[in-house]
Image (cartoon, rainbow, N blue to C red; front, top):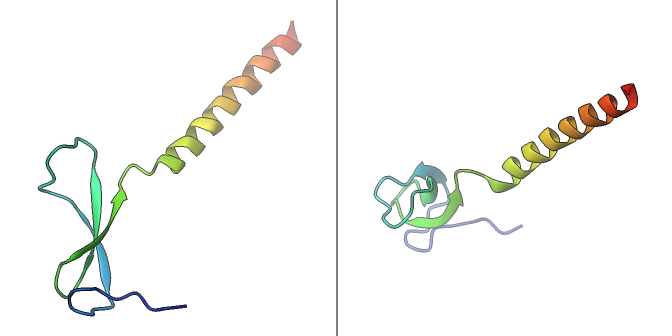
Length: 74
């Protein structure tokens, strides 16, 4: 597998940093940036949608199971 490197300075170490000065959005965003020079090489959604969807699926499953239990008790 190829080793990721910064296109600006060639650095190979990166960090995720909260975007503090991002205009035009109310969603929290993380920048993936080079530790050596600070160049942004990617963006991550802080509110990971797949995690939220999985949580909602689990919550819905619980509600349906309780509903079915109540129907069976009738």
